[in-house]
Length: 454
Image 1 (cartoon, rainbow, N blue to C red):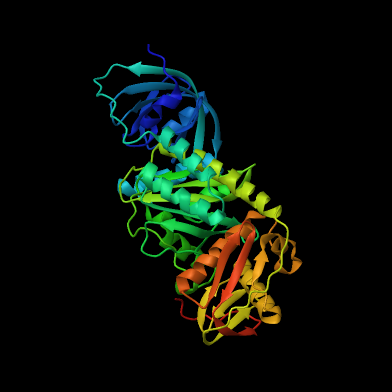
Image 2: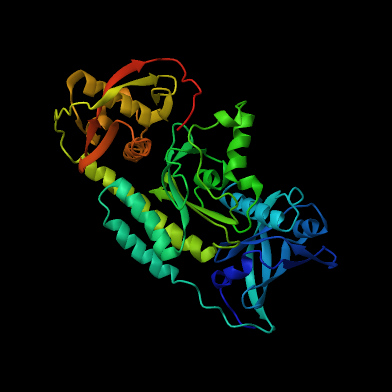
């Protein structure tokens, strides 16, 4: 018997090759069946998918013992795990991760709507046995993920501002991890939503597009604070479907569900979302997708979690550095050069429209309205993040990195629109408002109209 540790067998737990599960009843009568998923939990535990109450399930509850044969799809190395039943989970990170993977497997095998996860059966692995088999050489990996994570973290540490930090992150994912399509989202705990702050590889940036906690792979990763990975894509976790179904459950028309369309591949084959955490607090989510099935494995997941953890700490550190910057006033008035522009603010959701075109809403909308109002009254153009955090009228969420992220979002939305209003960082903790046209500010109150979006 050759002893190995469970963590080096994770390639056999991806679901490429169905596993064979053996149980017996309390009288010793054996039963053998195929199982959809054996999920790695930690170095001592796996979880099996509980989908039907059948003979296998009855045996497990009766004897609390099982064994499962797993096969590495790359080398065909075969191992037998001896298992001892611990518990069944019907919610939480392990359950949600298995549910997402099972949906992908079901879609890939034509069993969508039939495979439904009822629970995640947690087992302790009491023995691992290598079974005789003809094996192939271990393939050379396409890249060294540990080195990629290390070098990416070093690049992130050199970033001086939040928007630079996000851009460097997605650029490093492309150069060092070979990930062509990715985005970063920040959380707004007060609204229970995430909003896109940076993206790469899409025809439209989708800056400002939103996802609710629990919606699709991004929302589930955020809500459970755990990485979620799908190797074969399923409509259940596609963002068009997820957001549309959520809107319909809320009584909304799909065309009205979001002002800014969510970016993404039309037909992704695999996706991964990892939470950005700091000290246990959720800051956001890193998301990547590919047109290649099974593009992301357990090692990709580990490496991206390292990057996301470092990213979370740096976001919090940048905010603390900004707080140390003293306030300074400035009144650099630039003469308008364009025709007057009507700017309307709707208090119900703090949405801001330039003429008839939607621009932004929520926290970012409140910030922009304050800046424009102050500029109109005093001519002031220079502001700093500390004073905004201390302004009770902005009703900022408690997590202070939300302000920095909303400023980045606001700046990018203004730049994308090519509007007469721009926000420019002038030094750490300070930014300048540029207005190149006469503005007519109108506090319209009430709810914003549903108008065309540019």
